[in-house]
Length: 419
Image: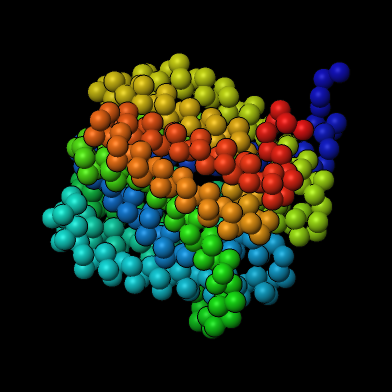
């Protein structure tokens, strides 16, 4: 008998409704992000696009420091708070993140000449990045607030790729966007526009009571920092050892590889607050069922994407630049890490949302050290392919490690073929 919508359980219907909305926005955002790469490569050239990716990497890393785990804390705490308490905690987190980002932006501005001389790029590039940082950080925090409130439309619209898509549209229409610095200025304007109601949560508030959350926030910050180190080490080391053109080609391959985890992003978007709710109620059985539903969706959508990318790798890369087709092997290696990531399920969410953030931190510590060592050893030897092997290898390592930790700590199984 064929399945119908009416035959599905309420939990399945709720998961699919939420996930479909986020997935649709993720697809739109991905198209916007790939559109940005396409327009930027043609407007700026491969070398300047590589410089933009380096600046974007620094921006992403510094925003993690500025938030200090408060975005993850909001995702875990808001579902358990009433409306007034949630607004107070949100306002405190927004203010604390903004102040932290302003301090880091000031340091980046002052160190711009040193960065240009020692690492690469040029002074204007790093100072433009400093201007973007506070706005970018606030967008990241506000997006998690919207997710914790189950406002998935707002959450989807605040994703990085949507901001990049807005800049891409402006670049395609306006000749003014002729340099990397101007692209970064456009990113700052896009972030300011998308904050919307988030500006209202910057009204004055006392930060003293936020201190009681310092331990869980710090644990989540350390996990986030380690994850960022692992995510961006390859890009930073490629920029150090190789040319900006190599960085640009690698980042395009990496972005194509993340198509495999589209479903995972969409499904997990609604799962984070749900894990917190079910765990706090002690409903382990429903939590296991929810995780299994997520695993089935991740597998059903991730496996076909992996096969398609593996087969079509040269064509997908040549769409952005004919010279990129030679990196097909790199894309296939990156795809391998992404499919393991999808199949292992929401392991980090489970650890962080169930009060086991210390275990998550230890997992990411081991993976980050391994990733750093692998990139340092493999990039000088294998070039761009070395970065891909280091990234995929450590992605597989931390997913399997965390999968085991989730079962030991919570008893929850995340693999579809393990009941």
